[in-house]
Image 1 (cartoon, one colour):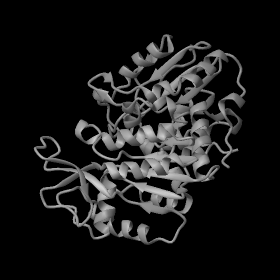
Image 2 (tube, helix red, strand yellow):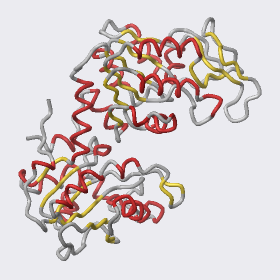
Image 3 (spheres, helix red, strand yellow):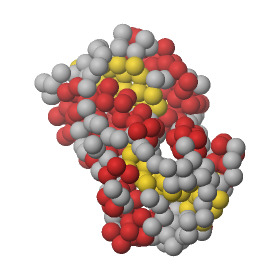
Image 4 (cartoon, helix red, strand yellow):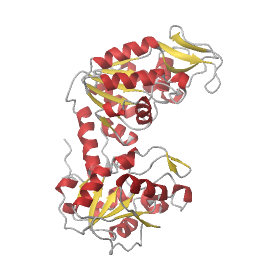
Length: 393
């Protein structure tokens, strides 16, 4: 088990300046935040910091400005949303370095501008980290979604503080607790539900899961690639041709898990303007050139529901189809219900899976919804996360 010092164990006097690294890389539509989950998940840590009298300097990245100041990636909309959710004033700094934090009082909050406006952040630059170090005397990391990146505020910066002045926030601690239930298999049967568009980026997690799980249920565009690797003509469907050999290797593996593939799919002639939709297209001998798979079919849904019903531990990453389109959302929504209703520890691994579970209305029935898609997959694959390793006791 990974052990880190957590915020509730951190000792600091009232008025101490605490650098609180968060992941407020939230989706924006203009200047409107469309999903504030990542902000909401930090509120327990923020309340604890304020109750204990910390002077809080919040820092985050947003988007990929590539080391340049770009207004569309400003954290100003985040400041407004955070103040609304917390019911407190949030002060603002137009940069993340060169800021005088000495006058920040106990329980006050200061949000500094996007860390990635400086190239030194993504380069894990020591000089940039040293400038950030001047802002505070204590360091708390709650940015699980960025912990797999060796960036300055995640890796170089905490090394500049005395070890006893660093800790993980309550969110980071919760992420580690539940993801370790997956990797340490606290309950069986363990069923993994994997979807999304492509296998690329999920190869190591898939290879880890076939060693850990009892069943791995495959859906989404990922299933198209597995079926194609099995020799099924997939018509005009999205197939990750670069990962065909990976799919073949996983299916031929003699590891613990049984890999389960769809037996029917929802196919149509077009995604945006379908004129013909077959909701029960059997996999059988495959599909014609004008047929494109966009969801799992009803027989597959029933099979997957049965597997999830018997599970005691479930990990879900990736939708079963193009759930943003009503015509192709049934499979994903059915899986959301099945995961929510299972008598099991349920962990949803970030990314589109979070959007799907929220859209389904079952989010409050999931044991843990991860705020980090890439980080959660890397953790499960067995990779060490720089932001976690630097905090280990």
